[in-house]
Length: 308
Image (cartoon, rainbow, N blue to C red; front, side):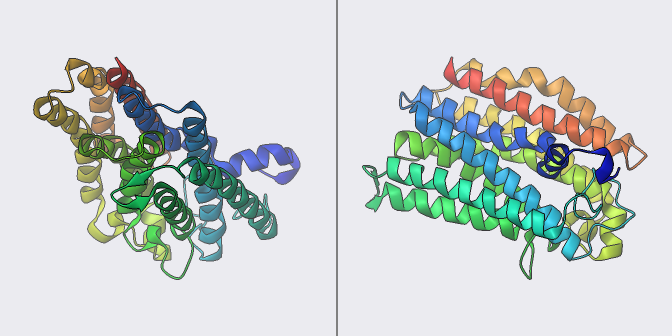
């Protein structure tokens, strides 16, 4: 693939990795559904939360492309999707400009969410201050996931970050800007989409095990081995469904509709089987896309169950 064969728009599309973007929207959709079920939905705030999550994912993707190239992690042995910096499709200066533009977009959306929370007070703290703290933390993590002297993705903390951001922060942050408070059942439920999105990262790290080992990128799969990666993937997926079962049994507020996502479990089971039997590294790109599809289907069916 060369720059001559691709338009600039197509190259930027490769850079933002559109197939990863549904992962950023899934937990926000769940947070919106919970806010709706509590009778506190604010449409404009919800749209802003969706846009903010989308921009944060794009920022993380651009920063990952930029910093992984700088640190030498994108070697010729890598079998994942095209990286625009490593392949020479975009210069580092162009990527920096893209990162800056995305950060400015995030700041604008964040300022709106901070402003919209100005009348909220939660346990003695200003709602605007809470939203500002969430926004700053999210922005820093999107960059520090790949950047800085100790990138989270290269010191074994990538999995924890994904669970934290795509589970706890995305769902509960969305719920908070709509309702003005947090709810313990929502906090528990937020772990489910977070675990499924973590499973996407596990496939990515499992696929890149050999190349990461060569360049010294310390993912959990590199630390503990590929067998660990299989178990982490399996447990992440199964635990997402068990969390819903726990909520159904523990909280009378939720009826059988909370279990609607179980219609996706046969698909999940097939993915678990493929994780243990897929041989070629390039085939894990397909498994990664299918796991992302599972996370989106799970979140959509969960949202439907929550609302009805």
